[in-house]
Length: 436
Image (cartoon, rainbow, N blue to C red; front, side, top):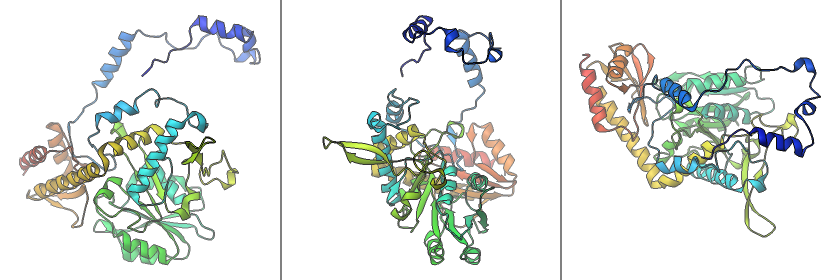
């Protein structure tokens, strides 16, 4: 990465000379009472003192090599090539690709990302991504808007932070967000049937859901489409490597967080909200879409296209106020997917699935722990215990293991990925036996 330094005094004076100005004349339009002689900011520190202070702060962090925590952020192996390429200075710039002729490399990377998302979900179109999975869910609800329809049904088994984001989006909007009750860790289909009516514009379901359980998406899709409503599927995209994709599940719109594809945990972000849909919903996608064309010399070229945003069309017709994306996160995703390939991605999903089920089986052998739901799950599951969740969590933290997420006084949400070894799983169970 190149160094970005402020202009020296000599360079500043050269620029002033070029425009035939002095500092005083340059700022003469500013009222004198607004000018200040100096700012109440400490003088700069030396490189050594800054590095020492940053290391002191960094040492306050506790890094766990062994992690069984998921709930929306997952520890997966990231090949070294992802950092090596994504951190090149050509990509790490504040420039946003409005002028396509100056941004062919970035636009090509976004186009390839979109292509991979479409291949993964099976749907027709993808945008350049949005900020995270929660934002993607809220934007998908926005895409469902129809005249004379004002209700959106959202499964209560969705990630609670996603649900909060959706409600925040529409708290002052003419859309009523209605939660679909759950039953045994899944959406209650009978309650869904009762809630569906002609005022419902769409149904949003997460599968695998917050508890790791696969929902009955085909049944939900049929119920939804029978009422002429839109079916939105929120998914962990890694699950598509082993199970049916969004097209096969008859989703109109598919969203989620692509953090498992090359994104570090990074204290919760920045992450990558992916969005894809069928052609029928293409013009409702927020943000930017990159298209492929040819230039006047008949060479391949990339352009921003179908931008349903307020900078390009009338504000009242814009589908969203989102007009950008975290392109470096999309780049990381594209590099990761290109690196592991279809077979590698399937292996990551297979190992995550198998190791999670091994962990569940081993924990279920303990006398005080049992699975909360007897459902089909991917790489997360919930346990109930007769011992308080805090004691289980404290025991593992004491032994440098980051445990699952506490859901209640006796419930914990566990997760495993390809990064977890059989030895780590065995160690967890041996440590917890000591609590019995």
